[in-house]
Length: 246
Image (cartoon, rainbow, N blue to C red; front, side):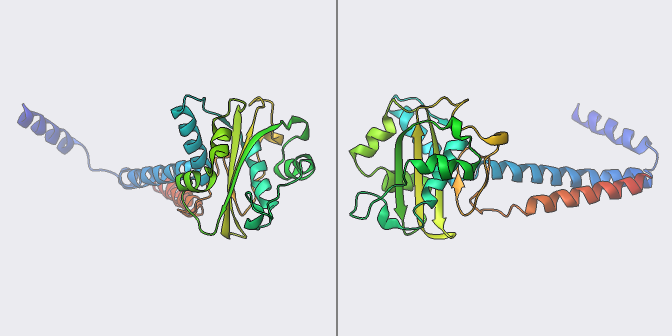
């Protein structure tokens, strides 16, 4: 049966007329363009998920659900504010934690500075029900940051598993793009559709730093500029095909 099928296919293609230049162009360029479009689309997908702040949220929610607590909504407005919270420390690790120089930003800064910098409507600010903040001289991966920096004591565990939270936002940032590195998670008891609302539904992206829920790549694992480059090649290939078919 297989031999008959192969013979039939061979006879079919041999009976076809010789391909024209346009047909050959389509045969050559179609797989090339397909590969380029798949590559560009895959790159976009990587960019949307390759963010240490998103990965930290995944670790937090995984630990909550493992302890019979509910997973929390990842609010990008709250996450952007978490990044602003980090920036308020101006790279001073000594001011983080329970040391003699420990500080935290004034509550007034949420409405006066953090919200405007993120494009969060001040009227939608909700109460902060907990925070986890840590600082390290070197960069480590999100799971290590969770276990080694943020989960410092029983108080940290109480904050993580609290039933008062309904949403969270995470941020990661170095100082001027380098060490020390800050990790921050803010929790809130607000409603996901009405708290920390972003103007135009888009958070203001600021560098250095990453925040969760924004579909924004911050890992620099691959160069974002490669994606427009791939699309440019694909467009050029389409134009070339158009001329060949013309």
